[in-house]
Length: 347
Image (cartoon, rainbow, N blue to C red; front, side, top):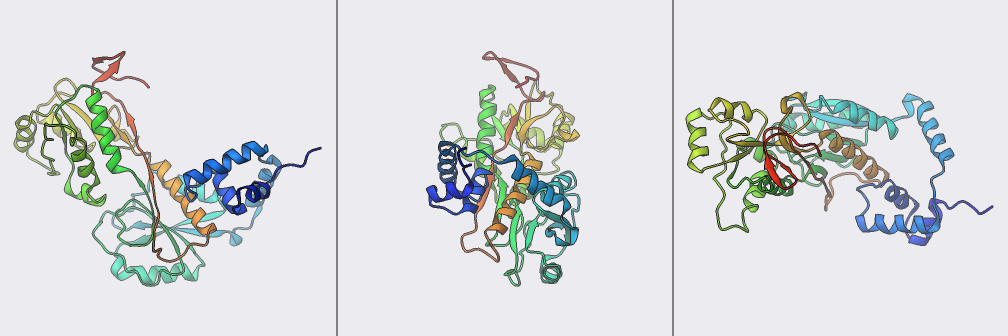
């Protein structure tokens, strides 16, 4: 019988390490896309097939391993918004368990005064991997001291600490696509309603993507509406003054538009840039940033970084981005066979 092709065989042919091959075949974001394609093509050419017996053995060893031998992956959440991971925490904990970690939550309210003491607690417990959840206060600067013993991955841009791996949605390009999707539905005057705080949390990428979407056109975009709690008069003045026929905003903006006298979608289209699958967005159109998908991949990135022995603040910190997906609901027009109609379309 022919000998089974192993990861070591592929690594020797590709002139990379076995760990690199393993990560590439698992589609790890830690490996460059071109390298992953090259390794996958080589694995297919050599006839590599995963060994189900070895996979079963690895799963078995993970299940029977005593808890006190398992590594701990710390997840630091914002004490001022402890529900920031409420819906996605079960997915974080489950994915960590699959990879052999116990995921534990730690609360941090004041980075300036609590950061170093929290890191001392983590160090005393033997924690090396730290996942930083998004924060409500995006203007708080984390101290850079005492970080050398840890491998950090943060979700989004709201954690202000240079030199850590970031996993984020692609807000700039997603906003470009968002405007383009609405144009495809026949909307011409599209307005962006984004509070300054929401835009600031992502380094103004929402507004930058919106403005860039109109660069090829001679018609300038409508001014961005930053008021989080406007009067109905101010809201009507913005919409009617700039002849806006579709609004990109937050889910809580939809009832405010209706209260101001605009019927959706008959007179005004609405699409949210924060579609998340909850009951608050039921029936809405919008960009789904797939938060569960994002946090699970953040755990994978942290695991890969730990395997590569990354620690401390990095001089060239990587950024891993994921694209959102457009959801066509009942708050915008839909396309059926090239004709604009009202209502929802299944895709």
